[in-house]
Length: 317
Image (cartoon, rainbow, N blue to C red; front, side, top):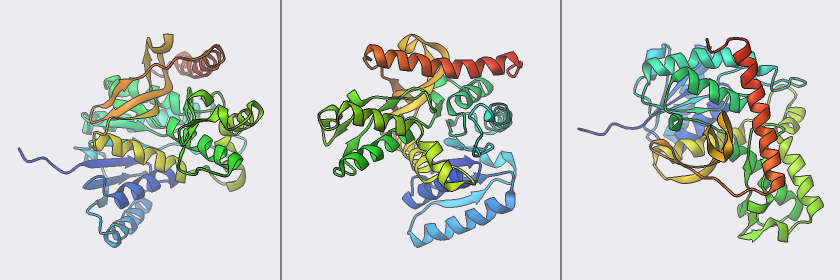
């Protein structure tokens, strides 16, 4: 059997989705990249532009548009960024029902036409949308994974850099829990060129970094006014796509279904996992101190409460 080239579909060709596709095309991580969006004209324009960029980069990636859902067939990875963006003054909860309906509709197509794919969820509220995608697809939990921890860790790393002014690119920040104001940054597991963060910054400075990390997305929304961040979210997503397609087994914090892990079940939260050809290859349970356990419990609780809202509204029936 001849092994086919890898195929990635990105559903939602807005800022985040288009940038994910662009990064993947530039890096040549797959042979075929498909854009799908409700606005077919915009998807066509972006696909054409990217195809020309791929030629400039001497990349072998072909970018096309799925005018019909059936054209996503054969996808190895499906990235879902479709959804209403978070506008200034809008909470993540406001987005809940709107984006849950959109996710349900999109996932039905993935289940029908790309039943062997791995789904990467990017739409907000991230953890709940990952849960919706898992329930609606019926896929094994290893094949539905949400992007958040890589982005939150990158934001934390940048804020650490701003504090110390050294070590750009050598800062490894660690974050777990939900993607939102209840995320759990882990200074204990964060380092600069291998030196523990706690040896470099004071307790007060670390607290300032942690607070800024939690509101990292809102800070960018405040500047942009008309939308939210997309370069860092897209790069974080592309890192996951590459880890899966290249079967690297690299460890990244991602939003996954917890089934007894850390003492929680039937909920999605961000924890360190190894990503490979099967999606989530292994889930790691870190030793948390009492403060981190408490924060993690609060984070899981806020995701559970949103899942409960969906259940009360009979969303899954």
